[in-house]
Image 1 (tube, rainbow, N blue to C red):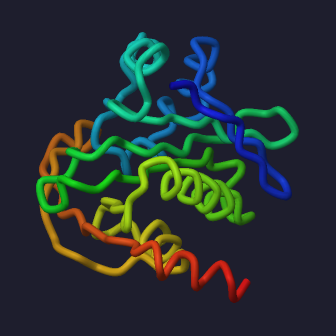
Image 2 (cartoon, rainbow, N blue to C red; image 1 turned 120 degrees about the vertical axis):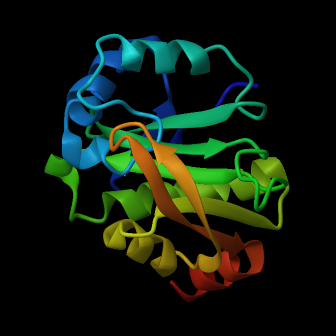
Length: 188
């Protein structure tokens, strides 16, 4: 299965391509203020890490691995929004999991919530699921606020190893019911 292009009022989310590795490294991988909130990225940046990530994703079935969308604004790469196939979370193994990051220069304009909402709509339809989960560092108040705004509710607390921080970090697991997502969209 190939991923579609998703469009919002301001953004286009397109499937990840091999050419995106440099933008991932430059905008995210080499910026500690982005990497510090991710579990799988190294700090300092390890040359080739973005290329390795891209090569693991491109060409795979996104419903079995990870559906990675590049978030673009006027054709410019500004971040990533992704849905990981069910199985990532021990607490909710049956649910797909959403993850995202937006480059610092583009934060504070609502792009993350706009992109994540579009990816969630796609995921609810594609996975035919009644809920989607997310995992966020407990101390990441901005991301927790975004997920709360989208309707996610706390489910459990766990720990995950964060490579960039070289330690286990408390993570809040949150869950979004399809009915809550649809009700919120109807009010908008």
